[in-house]
Length: 476
Ligand SMILES: [Zn+2]
Image: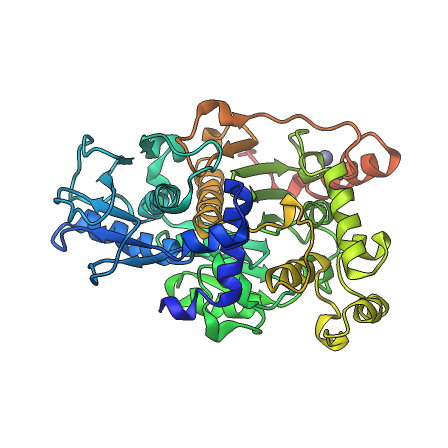
């Protein structure tokens, strides 16, 4: 199984992420990531077994994982539940209860063999994978997990009852079938979604994507992401129709009037987020990752007057310098890069600078994706900007899972969510101060004070204003 996931390109993505995060050379990062993690647990312990079943597919996208020693050496032994360590490597004790999970160098926390809700086991697996990665290979990573990391599920999900009941999405669009979109549907295996989810993505699965896109394996490379993801996830999510659209949401043919009731955003660029906000959705639920450091969950609707995706992900200097770096390395103009997708003319320019590339194979691709692929395959020795370094799989799966929790909570318990932005470290316990209310940015290109932005904002509110026919008549 592991050989079908950790392809040379996927390994390189992990090496780049670790080298940058830990401040070491790619050679040092490669050497560290060559190690293995051992998991020790009792097969009769239901909580430990479910945790391992969720941990393995996520952690194995970063480093090799074994559940029995093979005589070789290990960097870390994760001891899950009330069992004795085998003593083959420094131990991390994972203790689980239905209310939370704890990872520590000493077995001090309580453990219960009664499993948590399976969707919460995904959360535990993500934090556990983070601790395992840090203890095994992460020396030098800033802001690392504490020696005793305890996650309380009440801090993750205000009412866990939403996981037990069916949640109807109506007709909802998901933009992005990459790492976070994968994570969203990965966690959704364990809740009951109803309705229809239209999954939009124009990209194909690359070998490097396997490093973090948890549904995909080597057989899927070069296949379109959206239909592949829908086909793989659908049997696990039987109550909700997954409809693939192998194009960007912004390119769907019928997009007029009040067509976009609810938009779940799982794309990987700031610019794409602003473009999606400009489609005037009634409601937006978004999750993003800042390389391996942070997950940000965001919500906006047509009426609150609070920040939108354009306010949160405004064009900044980092984006401008990243555009310049990509333009310089690919041999195109910054305006080309701003258009997001590679035109035939831009493809011709790229091939003049990189003759090994077949122009037909890159037309229509995202500039970001091509740049990442060229960096990952070593064909571009670039000064890699932080925005193009992929996170580890556990970060993306955690982002997708928190996105799912936000969606089901917004739909089933809207009164419980008081803030519109949540910053979570995948390495540390969630803090209350991570939840914020973000106000509108006056110069936002989607909802700000310029004539165009204000017109867009007013149009959005008008499109989604409750119609009189929707109001319940009380005349007897
Ligand atoms: Zn805005």
